Length: 138
Image 1 (cartoon, rainbow, N blue to C red):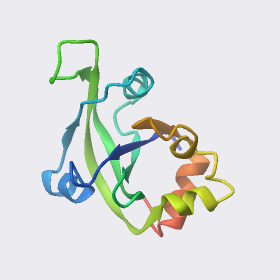
Image 2 (cartoon, helix red, strand yellow; image 1 turned 180 degrees about the horizontal axis):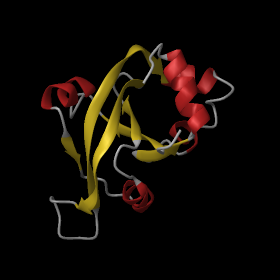
Image 3 (tube, one colour; image 1 turned 45 degrees about the vertical axis):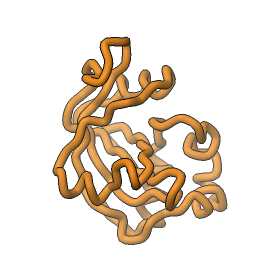
């Protein structure tokens, strides 16, 4: 794949994939972890983002893409970054955290190993596997 891939997390009651689909794009801000901030700063336009509903649902539900690279988080003057993302498509079948943990190719994903981090990289192999499990083609 030419572009990189990432996983972004949101609690669905805060901001769901359906809201992103309705809004057509959003600023992905509010990240207050240095590792996640640095990952946001590594994102390039058109990179793929798996959209994960955390806490409630605990499943990968959709695919988004980066439409604006890292910029100053508008919610703070401190050294935090944000990006803008737009929806690509909803997965036909959500991929649950249990599915990820049980799958030999996914069990070592940052989603599992770095579970407290809200923005993490995804390998090409992990992306392809999630899309296959989600019965979705890009």
